[in-house]
Each structure stands twice: as C-alpha cells, then as structure tokens.
Amino acid sequence: MTPYHSTLIYEDNNVLNNEYFSKFELAAEKLGFNAKHITRAFAIHNPGLEYAFNFHRNKISSQHRANPQLFKKDHWKNFKDSKKREGFFNYFNSICKKFPWNDGDKVHFFSSFSFFFFFFF
Image 1 (cartoon, helix red, strand yellow):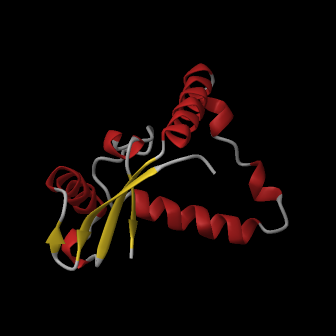
Image 2 (cartoon, rainbow, N blue to C red; image 1 turned 30 degrees about the vertical axis):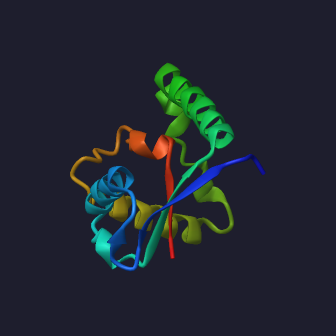
C-alpha cells in the first residue's frame, strides 16, 4: 500500500473543509445525489496511486486515439456467460446515458478526483 494523506471534510452536517467540500458537492450534483445526505466524507490524497492512474489513463487514451477500433470489440458476445456480460454492459450504458455531459465517445474524468478520492460512511 502506498502512503496517503486523509482529511475529514464533512461529518454529521458540519463542513470541516470548505474547499474540498465544495468540490465534493459539485461531483455529487453531477452524479445526481445530495452531498448533505452523506454522514461522513474524507478527501484522500495518494501521490503513488495518482501517478499510476495518470500513467495508465494516458496509455489507454493514446491507444484509443491511435486505433479506436481496438476498443469496439464484441468478441465477448461469444463467451459462455455472454448474457450476464450483456446485461451488465446494458446496465452500465443506461447509467452513462443519464448524464448529459457524457456523450459516450469520450471518458470524462473530474480533475479534482485525480488528487482526491472520496469515501462515504
């Protein structure tokens, strides 16, 4: 496990860090829920995980730009559990389509989450 820093930003209806909580509220609004319904929220900064994530994201994005057809495969439909996979795929697509900012051609990433990941309790 890589070292990380954890900051409690919200607990029992008390905002403990305005800067991070405002980012959390913005993300919650985009995801369709009220941040105030959460009992406790932490911002966690993990530089090692951030580096690994950005490296992998850049690699995948580069591969997608170079050859988009690599990512439009449907060979999974021939697997024995294809019905289960298709059900999950359809469920995931239905969630993605609920957000008007998600056009399905690009993966959008909240830049604030590249530094802070929120856990809810």
